[in-house]
Amino acid sequence: MGSIVAIVGRPNVGKSTLFNRLIQRREAIVDAVSGVTRDRNYGKTEWNGRTFSVIDTGGYVVGSDDIFEVEIDKQVELAIDEADAIIFMVDVESGVTGMDEAVTNLLRRVKKPIFLVVNKVDTAIRQNDASEFYSLGLGEYHTISSISGSGTGELLDAIVEAL
Ligand code: GDP
Ligand code: MG
Image 1 (tube, rainbow, N blue to C red):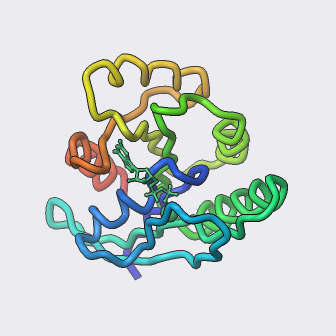
Image 2 (cartoon, rainbow, N blue to C red):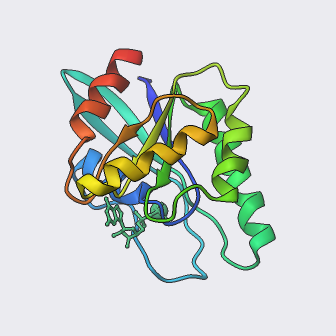
């Protein structure tokens, strides 16, 4: 089994959109509808001659906010165990949220490479807005637009270098 990269983060930051782009097939479910239970999706991708697996986390039961957080925690713990590197995705549109801080706390002890990825950076103005994510204390971040693909090449360069 080759290397595994897991994408974690709170709902709606764009994890599945990035996953779909990376595996270049529409396997993950991108949905705007609540109340759906979804499983983790696995896919294979290749970059700079390196093949690795990607896990799209986000199988969760939408119900109460409590279940929400517990499920995200479970997904993050699974990813920490299973993955060789972790993409922690946040959303520049919403800015830093309490759930981002909760995920950050789970990741603090992790010795594996963690890539903080600020998604939805579709414009130059949002590039500046992304700096608020320094407050998470995770250091440097990558800015991407999962929809347009901008920034994803640089991100993949860094990931395969770390694998
Ligand atoms: P997930 O819950 O983290 O898997 O998020 P999804 O991939 O399902 O995306 C949630 C919403 O954000 C969808 O409406 C996406 O179209 C939107 N989205 C994802 N990436 C981007 C992006 O780069 N820019 C913008 N503007 N919207 C995005
Ligand atoms: Mg998703």
